[in-house]
Length: 413
Image (cartoon, rainbow, N blue to C red; front, side, top):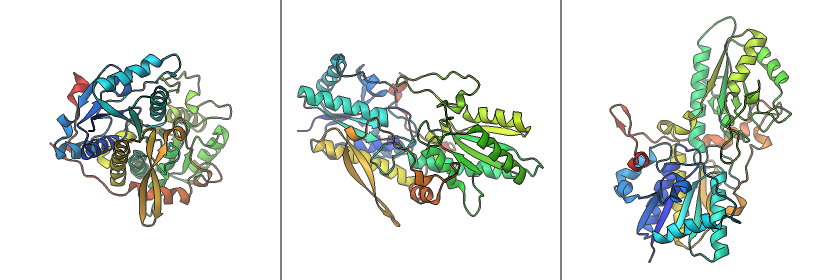
């Protein structure tokens, strides 16, 4: 008889990570598991024994529908780095002990590169010590940089938000007919992979001129070439909108947001916490040209916009959660569902399972064929890749004029 499972979330949230949690819950119940527990604040909270019975929130089908429409991490997230197994076996054994105490057979972890590393190490420990518990990954990241999979749940909705917002910014900036243009620089998330910033190209259409330049971290950023581009655009256009990844860097490896001697804080995984790229570039543009500038940083908005989530994304996130739960019910471990594009027109995408060891700690950059030869634009090949991903909408449930969210009270106790 199947016992119980537990699911957690880790890293930066997305507009659809909760849809994946709903998928795990729904399929685990279909497969006959007695209880589906949720970790409060990921593996960090789990190590403290913080779990909740998800029946309290999701037994009613309306709970699942609200969860699909709720942004951020319903269960609470964390940025907790698991230590190396050797020398820290007690940490791993504690997780096994908590699972056994609560009769938990499988631990599901929804997240990106670092989260999949947690799944890998837990499954490696269980295999090395002969434990029966299993561990499954559930893909999530707006960065779209997990390998193997065609794209990542969470990316499509963020891309839809970015394309929409860029289009609105362009419309706003074009409304002023001043003799000298305002230079707008929009900063979009992306440390080493520029998938999110590439989505700015989606704004272009028969009703929108699109971005004037798009800079990704896959190409070395040259400030002199950038300024020459800005000056040319300012001399030929009355509106200039440029999109940049927060992680663009110069030839010496320094992030542009470090210009001026800024010291960036570092998180638990050793990643510099980026921000201020657009502001730094606007400061330089204004000083050198005297033009009016405006820096816009999407920040968390691009990952929290469930009101404009892609229905394609919501459905694929839900089905990825279901696929992980089905695999666990079959006794599989150390796997992550991957999306496989089966057809472009019409768009059809299936789900396969892949070994977590090929995925953890591997970043997938934007390929060369998606970046223009001059390094400051996006090709039609990317647009063909991305457009199907942003299709469809999931209408929020409105209460008092605003979207209704499902909120876990245990997060605030």
